[in-house]
Image (cartoon, rainbow, N blue to C red; front, side, top):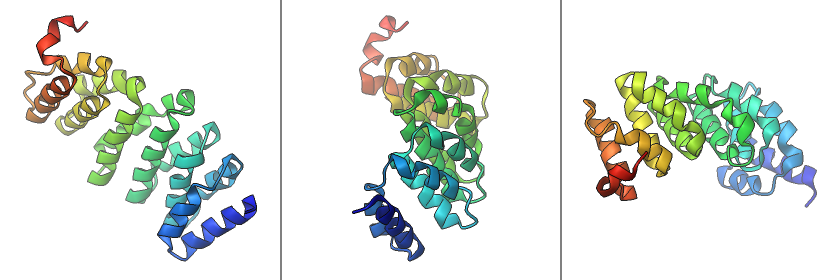
Length: 198
């Protein structure tokens, strides 16, 4: 199947509202489709923007990071949510440019919509150790809801640098922060070995 044919079939499926077919075609897109997908992040149609971000999560590279970062401020809830997830997925392929987006991604922890807040917390967890210092800062100075989501993200990382941060919050006044700290350390088996934590 020619590359142009895959891209055109993908957009045809999107325009027809055939989500299953569009999703199947995402896997057949390639790096050569990144510029046109990035361009579609500026479409006037929310569905087009959503699918562009979704496809970039799969095939995007450093060229897509700036466009996806801009989509974090999209007026549509679903587009903001998929954009932050896409950046998280790109973090494993092009960590340096995504690292510069971490503050904007973390800002979505206080988004008005719960779907976006959850997507941001999950995305920051996927970014791994690069996001630990930023999440530690939020835990130290953020609002109560932001702190809860930051603790959740650190717990979900399940790595030693996150555990070191969570250890400081085992006695936090915020019940959710305490719970995430306790369960995160327990999941890693560190509650019995806290003296070994730096």
